[in-house]
Image (tube, rainbow, N blue to C red; front, top):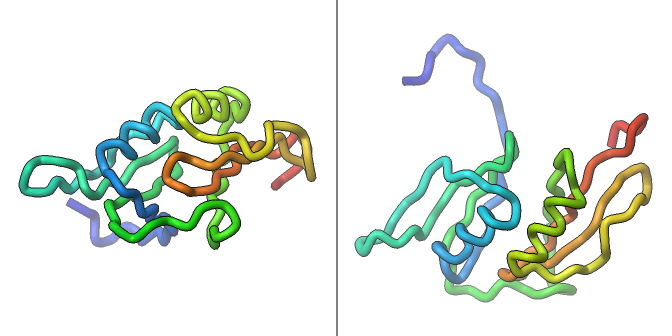
Length: 133
């Protein structure tokens, strides 16, 4: 139970529409090491909504029949800040993402960009030492 005296911490957690909940959940687990925090199954037990976390960073995924715009039509870009961007980027590509640009040092970051199998753009990176990103 939540402590009513504890201060409330505001957060922003993106919701990613995906065509297939179980496939998306498996992808994000393989690509980013995402951990399930909450799932909502349909009547057949298939996960149709999930809240997942990569470290302290949380996001939601949910089945949506509307197509997700591909590169060029994207309005939101996810930035996943991790300790080892090269490793996570490689995992994401191995799990099915498409490299947009490879991990390199740019603008005070070690960062690369990819497009996941569901049409979402991700930058995987971390600030370089001495940068506060």
